[in-house]
Every structure is written in C-alpha cells, then in structure tokens.
Image 1 (cartoon, one colour):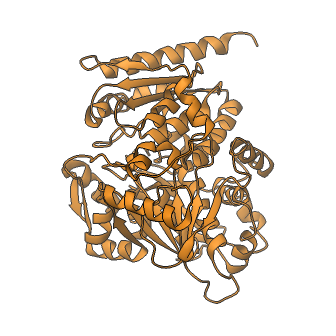
Image 2 (image 1 turned 120 degrees about the vertical axis):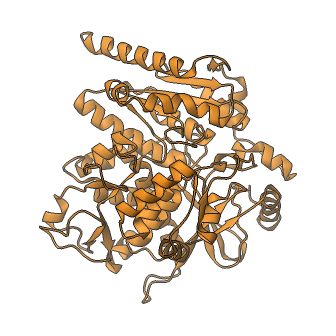
Image 3 (image 1 turned 135 degrees about the vertical axis):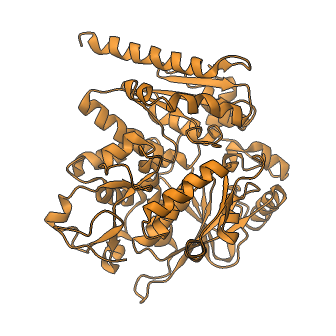
Length: 511
C-alpha cells in the first residue's frame, strides 16, 4: 500500500498515511478523515456524516478514504495500552480533533465503558495448548456488541446535544433485500446503549421465537420511555418487509431523522478494530523481532463486522492471520473457499443463533478493501447480488480474499463437542468459541455462555447464570405485538411520527 504525502494526495480511493512513534504531524493531526462509499457514487463525508448515515446514498457502505499505516515503533508503544487506551488511539485517528477534541473523546469512551463488569473491559483467558480466548462479553448485555454500541451511542449523543437534534434508531437488518431481522445481541445491546438518552428514541423489531429466551428478556424488560420493542409474529423474511418499506421512503427517513445502529454503521466497525490490536499485543511472543511475529485471530462471525475490522487492522500493518468461524449458515465460508457468494434457501436455526445470518453485509467492505478500493467493481458485484442473490467472485478478488482470510464452518454437533472439550480440558465456562485448536492463536469470544443456556444444556454442561441474568425472569416486560395480518409498515410509520411529534413538543417547552 502506498503512502500519501500531505498536503495534496492521490485523489479519491484507498491511500495511506503514516502514524509514526512521535504521533501525527500537526498537519496530519488537523486533517479531516474522509469516508467514501464502497460503490463510489455518493460524495465523501466526515465521521459525523458516516455515523448518522448508515448506508451511503448510493447503497454502499462508508469506508475510510485513507488508512493510517502504523510503523513498528508505534505498534511497540501501543502494545502497553489497555483496551480503552487502544480504542481512544484508534478513534482519534479515524474521527479527528476538529470533530471531537481529544479530551472530549477520551471522556466519551471512559463513559462508554463505565458499566462494564471487568476492570480491563475485555479479558484474555489463556487455555491449554496455546489457545487464548479474548472475552468480549463483560458489558451490560454479556455480548461483544456492547463494546462498539456503547461508544457509538456516546458519539451520537455528543453530536445530537451539540446540534440540538433528535434521531430515531430502527434496529433490524431489514434495510436491504434478504436481510433478516435483528439478532438478539444487536437489539439488546443497542437498547442498553441508548436507554434514557434524551435525544434518541429506539425502535426494535423482535423476531418472536428466533432469539434465545435471555436475549428476548434483555430487550423486553427495559421500560425507559425512549425504548420501543415490537414482537413480530412472522418469519425473518416477513419481518424484513416493514423496515424495508419505511427506509425506502427517503423523504420520510430524512423528515424523521431515522438511522440504524446495525454493523453497517462505520462507528461500530471502528471500535471493533481494537479487538484485533488488543488480541495481537497480548498474544504476540515479542515485538523485538523482524519481521514482527504473526498471531492467528479466530473470528466467529455472522454479518462480518468483526471480520471487516480485522481486515482493516491487517491493512494498517498489524501482522494477524484471520480465520472466520461460522455455523451452518455458511455464506462467508463458501465465499472464502469457493468464491461462491450466494444465498442458501433459508436461514438455518443453530445453537449460535446470533450468527444465523443469510447476508453478511460487511463483506462489501472487505471486497472493496481487497480489490484496491475498486468502487466500480464493488458496485457491479453488489448490484448483481441484490438482483440474483448469488454470484461467483472474480478470480483475482477471490485469490486476494482467500489469501487474507481462511475459514471454518461447523455444525451444532461440533459446537457442543467443542464446548465439552473446552470444559473438560480447562474447567472454564465455555465462551461459545467454535473453532478447533491446532496452533497458538486467539479466539474472539463474542458472547457469554449465560445468554445461551439452551446450547449449554444441550452439551450437558453445568452453567451458573449471573444474578443479573436470573433477575430478568422476574422483571416486568413491555413489548407491542405486531400480529400477523396487521399492516406492520403502517404501525412502524405511526410510531415514528408519534415520536417525532413528542420530541418537537418537548423541544418547545421552556427549560
């Protein structure tokens, strides 16, 4: 990857600039980081624009126009940082002090992690045979999405309070064809991150019967008046329709300031880059050798947000080898192994329900990155996929992709067998990490086993649920039904319009 000299540059497209041991030069430090669409048609935006946009206007996903290149000395200095310290350094590179001054940024990130149960925020468990497990689930909802969503919510509120604005967040993957509804982890973590926020209302469509019991309770027991949960009595394809219908009305979206907090949102991917740096620094035997030693990072993934973050870290100079771990819903595995980016007939329910995803939409970011920021090629691929729901990757792109990431697809039987072996060998609570171990490596553990008691029971393992999880059974719940046969899109629009009216009425009241 080339290095751009500033001022000037090499035009729109993926470039790089160097962040050396002494930090950024004054010119670089004051420079705005721009984000471009993977499809190349939408105009560039700054971080605030990417944060509030979700999808780019041309249907693509926002990506950094230029990636910082970290030299050896910077990596050595970062290697001593805590997880929150790494998040602060990464966010300062990708946001810029002209939007959020560094002191404000540090305060926002400290507040984001203030409710995490572990003093380190994330925790590395060292297991037998050189396997390390990075526990990313010590946040309020016991899932890795707490990490990125807690930060993203702080960034949202910072800009909203500054601009005296309001947004309504709609959580669901139903913003493009064939995307099923929200996973339980996304819905609960998004609710937790913004509950009580005066400038944000959140609407979550809960696919009844398609989340674990704990995941459902984590959504329906939050009673703040800015949280609105709907229980949809239909399958994932049916649940998708009202969200698509609402977001297809561009004028309505703009009028009511609608946005998404799914992993299409760049801010979430940005925070997740820190997982890979932290894993590398805690697992690399030494940073004194040349070249730097590689570390294999296993990424259980559904929508490929964590995987895209890992690919970005690789391209910033972090010597990691990525392994994507998926369940029977194996589109990522087929894409990596065969170049076959096509939908299966249906989503297959598995023990790893948060990964039961048909369309891994962050693969678009990965295609763009590994194609050398080929926006036209990426647009052609994704538009073809949206029409035909299947395609074969060009040979050159497939070779680059399979060279950057390997993969494994596992059955429910393999999941439970791995949990049993992990328990027998280490006597530690299983973290739903699914990949067989061969060499020293770090597996990202995205969710606590406490959220998936059904899977733990299927493996015949003991599980002592945390008190917070047990207490959910006895809390009051609130969930508005979306019965089959009703006009779900109309219900959604009516709710959004009512929330906009309420915000305007409150804004007019004297403080």
